[in-house]
Image 1 (tube, rainbow, N blue to C red):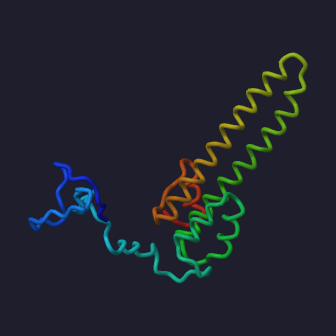
Image 2 (cartoon, rainbow, N blue to C red; image 1 turned 120 degrees about the horizontal axis):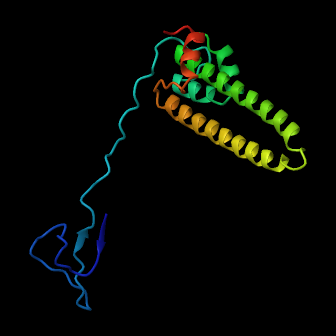
Image 3 (cartoon, one colour; image 1 turned 60 degrees about the vertical axis):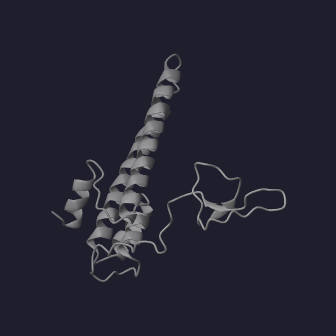
Amino acid sequence: MAFVGWKKQNCLPERTLGVVTANAFGVDETPYILCKYFMPDEPTPPPPPVSDSPQSTGLPSNIAAALACIPLIGGIVFYYLEKNDQFVRFYAMQSIILGGLYLLCWIVYSILFGILSPIPAIGFFFGIILTVTWALIRVAVVVLWIIATVKAFTRVRWDIPYIGPIARKQVGES
């Protein structure tokens, strides 16, 4: 991409033919290259799929695994739909376990909040502590979900801490 501009000493002209072209106002109209870096013509090809086994869903492994990372629902759907691809089943099992733990934490939070927050003098403080704890748990689950989805989409097998080894045992991997 070249632009027409005033002649500057720190810019190199695109072509130097020894002829300086000036318009009627005396402005040099020699084109200059503003950037020495060019984009490649073709992008690099995507990496090969993780497994060559036939997929039950008809989706590529990375897309099916990324969709399986949706906590609980995506995991259950893809765990039962995908029978052959261990990569997708692993991420689906991680999703089921993460979603189940999230649901369990929500139930415990609701029970504790219902019992402790109505206490007259200190219930307000219990409510604040429980609400902050619940907010931190929700943020942690969202961060783990985003990381797992990105890793699955890029065809990297990533274990969620403490959940990944359990999922490997359930799927039958070592």
